[in-house]
Length: 78
Image 1 (cartoon, rainbow, N blue to C red):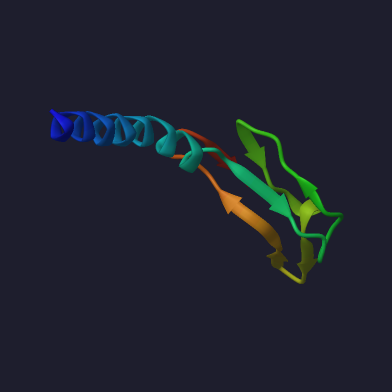
Image 2: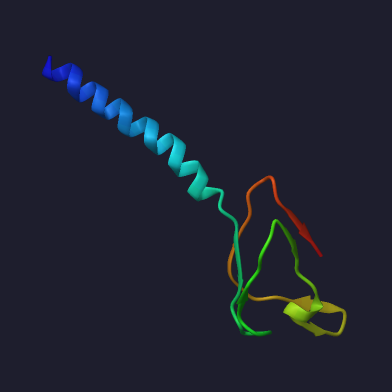
């Protein structure tokens, strides 16, 4: 009987992790770190990262991010 209780508890713990873990992993988070423009967090679900968030040198555009994570259901415009 005790083995069945342990198996049920382990199964329940795995089920909870399977539900919670993907939600946390897919939470989008993009931050500008402040090196090339003022530090800020961007708000989605559609993110536009333009010239004003970086530094243009000649024909090159540079950005500096603190964090950059998107789920596969979000869009990034340039």
